[in-house]
Length: 518
Image 1: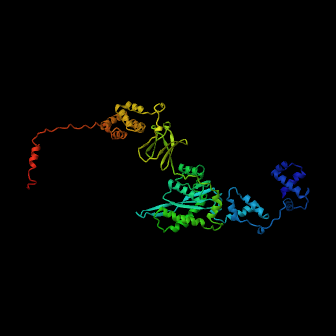
Image 2 (image 1 turned 90 degrees about the horizontal axis):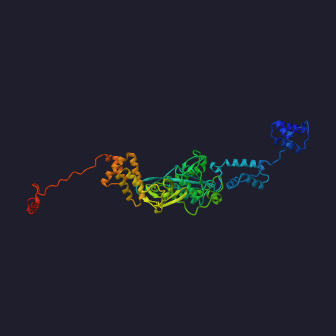
Image 3 (image 1 turned 90 degrees about the vertical axis):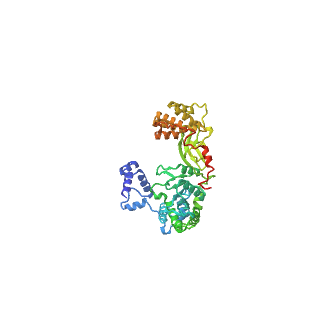
C-alpha cells in the first residue's frame, strides 16, 4: 500500500494541502481525504512504526467486517422476486430492502443482484425478459396455415393464424382469419383486446405489412387506420426493429407454441369452415393458458389475473369501427372522387387536399382535422352525391369557375364547342357536375388543338352525341379530319312498271290451287 504511505507522508510530514497532495500523486482529492480520515479513525500515529507492514496498514485502515458464510445466509424465493418485479415501480433495490428487513443477516445488495441474475439465467430465455404488468402486448402471424375445404365445391383455402401474447404473464390469444390484410388484421386486434378485457400501454407488432407503412427503428410510419385504431383504444403502436428477433421474443415463442401444440395436432383434421377452425383453436388456447409453467409457479391464466389484468386500461365504451383513410384533392366542381364516385364538399375548399375516412356505410371528409362533409357511401361509378349546402351562392364573387365562364371559354374556340359545353352543363341535375367533362374538353383542346376540337364538336352536333367521350373518340380516330358522311339521294320508282304486277295479279293468284293440288 505504497500509495497510502505517500498520501500520509505528504499530508502529515510535508504539510501539503489535500489538493496539492492529490495533484502531486495524480489521484483524486477524495482519495486523499478518505485515506486521511481512515488513518485518524484507526488510532495509528505518525510516523508509522517500522515493523508495520503494508498488509497490516491496509487491515487497520480497511477493517473487514465478519459476515456469515454463504451457506448460512437465507435465500429469497426468486420466482416470487421475479413476479414482484413485474409490478409497476418495483425495482431490485426495493425488493432487496424488503428482503433485508425480513433477513438482517442476508446478502448485501450487490450479492443479492448477482444471485438474482444467476437464477434468471436458468429460466427460459423468453421468461427471462422482464416486462411491466399491463405494459406490452405482442402480436404476429404464425408461419403455418390451416387448410379449410369448401364442403360444396371442394375448394381448399388457407387460413392465417393471428397470435398475441401479453408481456408480463404470457397470456396467449390465437384465432384464424382468411387473410393478413388490414381489415382482417384490425378485426383480430379488436377481438384480441376484448378477449383480454383491457388495453396495454404499448402494442408491439412485427412490422405487419398491412399496419406498418414504413419500418424504421427511429421513425416508423403506421398505417392511418392502424393509428386510428390505437387512438380509439388509448394505446400506442411500437413496431419491432427489422431483423431483431429479440424485440419480439415473447410472441415468437408464443407463435412456436401455437404451431406445435395447437396447429400440429390438428393437421389431420378436416375443417369445412373458418368458424369450425376457430372453435377448435379456442378450446386449445384455453387449455394452453391453464397449463402450469415448468420452472415458475402458476399458469398463464393465474399470472394474468395477478399481474396483467389489474394493470390493463379499460376498454372504450364503443367498439372500433373499421375505416380506411385516403387523401383526395377537391376539383373545381367542389367534389372529390373516391372509388369512381363523386362526393361534394363546401365550395370554399376547391383545389384543397382533404382526408377521406371510409367506413362500411359512410364517407367522411376532413380538412385539417375538422370534418367538413359526410355522405352515405355509394358504390355507383360515375355517380354524384351532392349536398345543396355545399353549392356556391350566386353572389359569391370569389368563385372562379361558373357555368357561364365555361360556356364563354367554349365559344372562344368556336360556336360548336360552346354549344357542346352548354349541352353538357344542361344535362346535369347540378351544372357543377358537368365541370369535369368541360375540363376534359379543355384538355382535348390543348392536346389536339382548338381547330380540331371545333371540327369534332361540329361532327358531334351532326350525330347528336354531344358528350366528352364522343369528342374524345372522334379526335382519337381522326374522324374530325375526314369529310362528314352524306347519304345518297333516294330514287323513287314509278308506281306503274312492266315488272310491277299490281294488286290484280295477287287477287287472281289467291283462287289458284296450292302447288297445283286442288
